[in-house]
Amino acid sequence: MSILIVGICLLLLILLITWGKVNPFLAFLVTSMLAGWLLGVPLTGIAHSVQKGIGDTLGSLVIVIALGAMLGKLVAESGAAQKIADVMMSLFGTRYIQWGLVCTGFIIGIPLFYSVGFVLMVPLIFSVVYQYRLPAVYIGLPMLSSLSVAHGFLPPHPSPAALVAQFGANMGVTLLYGLIIAVPTIILAGPVYAQTLKNIKSEPLDIFATKARPADTLPGAANSFLTALLPVVLLALTTVFTFAFQADPAIKSLMTFIGDPATVMLLSVAVATLTLGLQQGKSMKQIMGIYEEAAKDVAMILLIIAGAGAFKQVLSDSGISQEIANQLQRVSLNPLILGWLIAAIIRVCLGSATVAGLTAAGIIAPLMTQQQVNPNLMVIAIGAGSLMFSHVNDPGFWMFKEYFNLSLKDTIRSWSMMETLVAVIGLAGVLIINVFI
Image (cartoon, rainbow, N blue to C red):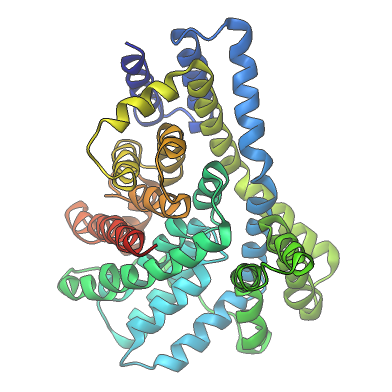
């Protein structure tokens, strides 16, 4: 009966968001309180569970996600993203222009939130399409696949970062595994799959053919690359040093402090403030204005994550999480596959990758303590599942359709299938790594 109640509450959550058009944060709050009441949580304890879930979830994430948004916003506003794109295009040339766009999308996608990266990269895609008279979908989809992979697989993006905190995973190790899986996933779901899409007719709207900033106003190439990728570099280096100097408590302690995600992001923003802000002629007031706008951009993402934390805590306090874990243990599926499957189902129903990943994590978390599951791989497995088959209930689907001026049929054939390939190949990569660790 309890599991049936959870199923009904999940269905209500889906209906509130999709049919009722209710904001996901409000939908999570309503569903959490209703679930607590139906599952027998004392009335005096429901509000406490919701507040605890929100506090515990956001406590370790607000700094990482907010600072990540600030860094990404400054990378975009300073022209560093455009400079990275220009350098990659000059390196790869006309013949391999598609691969240049893929690498550009992946590098820029690491510090930028998905929607920001999408809007930033589309004008670049269209400028290449207009200049070289190439098929828009064939050229553009691989770059967007790299953005999607970074969004779903790699911290400090919101969903992977939240999953790392929830499962007690190591952000540096998760990033390392994510990078290993990301490369073949992007290649297969991007340039390789795009070979089948050359005949799709697409006439991008003229309104999106925006002009690039003058080259002499952009920051230098080394500055742009190093600043944008500094979080990745710091996480990777501290992870390696921690393992290499485990016998030296002082160095290990220092690396643990520097390698903490909050410290990494704070150092990265501090460096960016100097290299992409003050040194580029911006005043401190202008830089802080950019950071304030970034915080506004990410506020709703934080609230959605908070709502998912409340729902998870209610399930935990009611005891149903343990019951679900006991039931899931009887399912003859690898826990990594099970986590991926739950995320994929919720993603197809809801459309939001972030909501799908966090909801699946709340369901699968109790199982993690009962079975020997690598938490770093579970983060990526659920992240991959949360990208499964984007369709009409996903804003990204409509952004791609409208920007590229496609029919529904061609959007599903290109965009939806690309996202499905990312999800499936990502799971395959997780399972392969799991064999060797």
